[in-house]
Image 1 (tube, helix red, strand yellow):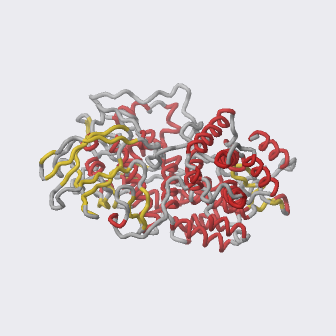
Image 2: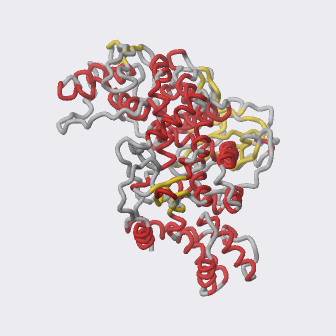
Image 3: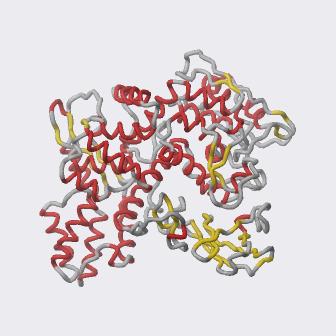
Length: 628
């Protein structure tokens, strides 16, 4: 069925004309694993509350909710709530395998808070079994156990897309939503059917329908409503009849609901986001309102349109740039918009796989799964606070001297004023005041398991942050040099890349990466390695374009960040990356005109990030496509 759908699409949308590709392409965009999971959770409300207002956690169900943005929100799967209902005046700490069995606050014990008549503490725990004990007024109570089993990002108990094939990415495209790679294999089809079958087979019937399923009016209404939300557009009369027939053919009403849900969730109309539109003058296609609603929701939320957005599509108001702007502002105010955008930036920075990152225990004895969780929490909190709470700019991403740490990540940064697992806004030392570049997430992701990597860091700056394309390494390029306890990483990599055959690329990589060596493979600051002094002098040559012959020297990470934000290329690259994510692919040469227009707007609005996202949605480019 999926292949037939694609064949129909391709047959109906062919063109023999040579096209100057100024507009994004007409296309079908397969849901990514991330989008698939988020869509199901939103569509089926598998993990949701009717939000209630709050001022503290005590106003919520402490065992399972937290007060976030003045609303009681369900905790993520990885969040465990420790509760102790003894003497409220006692000092109670948590000591366990996750914090090295620390028994005092100074050693790293986690102190409980008081609320709703009990003492409690919320902390994200890594997957697996954990042992812990309460320390009450200095005395340890009996050991207890808990087990955490969550999706890789710590959000969900069940990830229906966990076994889907990994998305492929063309070179220089750093996001998971590349539209040109969204064709399905038989493996895809099998996994889609398996995931939908497992869900519809096991979930309570109330997951799908809340009315009396013995009533024909209930079923007709449910097919109409659930079908509209699943396909992100109204069902045709023929489709309604088909799903009614599926329901009627089942052995009983409950099985009928499950059969209809299974059919909807394995349909290409659910699995693909359609960007075809209506053809107008000169072969330009304008998206219909439901296609616009879908494009908006997956760009700003990474998930399906909500009822308000679908109603706007029904009223055909999304053709208006002003209405799209209003809706975009509303969408960015919601928690899922903030969380989604922090994920987009993590993809851009190359820091999405933090929670499964592997570090050599001998080289980095103090890096544990809890460190990885803390780094992930830091980057999410930093991005969300800079971009949304502070309505910040591109420059703020690189110049911030504040971050969000718990006691574990603070110890990596050699900060001793932070206690417990709760993320706290923390002032950074001057040598680390470089925004996202100084995050443990960035420094540990662009490193090896047993050592830092000047090459990975230099390449990340060039390709991800400046959008500069480096050549392919020669076939005989060596691997990372082996660890040598008699020399520094800086010395070993300098020797490793001295070959003249490598110089054409490494002249742009090494002066950046080698100068970042004062941060080791997990982001700890150091001035020497193995007794060898580390030279912090670097040069971001040709920042505005390779081969331009310019020089910008620096000796600290904040100085490197300043060079980036003072350049034109840094901001232009950021706009280009957001454009790529919005339309699911690398731009054509002709599309550079669109990007240049967004850059002008971006600069005129002091590089405000939310304004850029809204401007993209409100643009005519966002709702037009063309055949290629």
